Length: 233
Image (cartoon, rainbow, N blue to C red; front, side):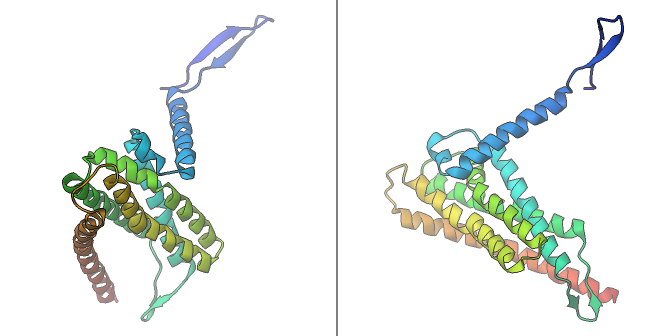
């Protein structure tokens, strides 16, 4: 919606425009403010989202997207800043290729985690919808998103050791520690005949199989890309 201009009569007889705020921009500002409040609240205590059972699916998706962008930019910064040679020619990373591949990989791994959690709790734990798990998992990614941002800033200023450490820790936290923590919290909400340890084992098996399949496709894709580049030379 375009800005609405209303002419007001001044004291001297002259008219002056009264520009009404753009409704779309105002809605974006409100949404950004609400998300910032959500981010700060659950950065302090992300596990509260399980007890409160709030509807945070959309906020969780936004957090996943932001984290994926930060990680993608971090990978590109690593490849760009740390110039290296592959065989006989210099390799110049493509911004859109690196960012796109990184973001897509993060989305796929996130989907594998959420899908594994959903299958595990559906048959062994308290019943949670897929939407609920997206909100819970996305909210628990807030600390990882914050660490990924710090890692990106460190990599930009060429602090590679600390940047790589924080980036690795953020990935480890997001895709290994956080899912197991969520699963443990969920299965404790309901008395189960199966010990929580075996629920964790079931999750690890489901995630391991799905992740191994993803790595196989990723390896085939990378091998094909390298072969095509070698053929070009």
